Image (tube, rainbow, N blue to C red; front, side):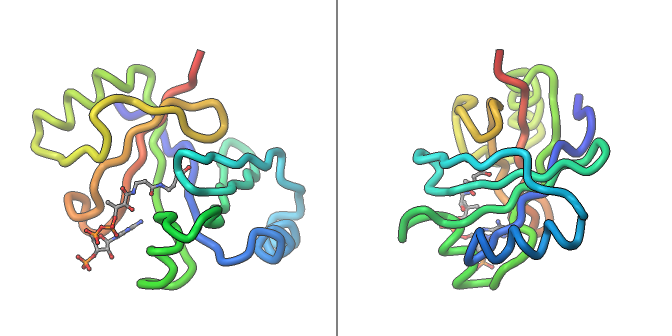
Length: 134
Ligand code: CMX
């Protein structure tokens, strides 16, 4: 079962510049900066009420974020849904015919286990499932 939207991921060219914009917009400071080597990203998280926003900057030239920005420009990169049992949810989506972009849950930013679902299956929106890592 999908519990709620956990965060929105926004692809940005420059994390420092984007951070300043979002600090002004939201009136708060980010609570965490984290580099995730395996995903080729540096991330910055803001929390406003129950909602989170993740800013994503490419940390290497082959990053999915670089490719996304080259093609589409800066903007919303993914919607992340919180799930309690990511393996069960992956199995459910697989059986419904969705294309999962990883076979097994992997370690993502902000202490989560994650799995991506291809944007082509979701009318052009990249979906991330995430479960709190123990
Ligand atoms: N949202 C919507 N559409 C997207 C997209 C996104 N984030 N990223 C790519 N696409 C589109 C492409 O524009 C392309 O569209 P067209 O066929 O109309 O040209 C299509 O999806 C497929 O593109 P592709 O060339 O086959 O594949 P890419 O090499 O661009 O890879 C994707 C796309 C989603 C498979 C890849 O980016 C991926 O595996 N993403 C998951 C991992 C990830 O995004 N990590 C970074 C974030 C990590 C984090 O949140 O911490």
